[in-house]
Length: 87
Image (cartoon, rainbow, N blue to C red; front, side, top):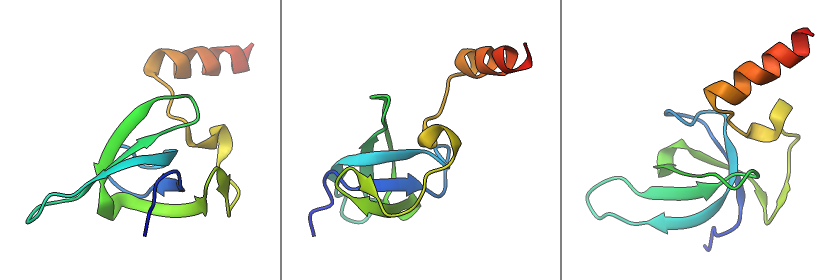
């Protein structure tokens, strides 16, 4: 099955909760398979195949996405958003 451009959510590891589309899949015989993803903001990240849960085909997810559409903010962006919300 070709998984390219499917929407998926990360269910484990450091990227837990992030949502993105699959870019490539690296096969490593005898080791973990690595999935490279890209989120809606254009940030690329990678994780193990066991941490990926497909939630839609193409650009359309089958489920509603969490607040922020699964985009992980940097520490500075997160702080600025929280301060703006307080004011």
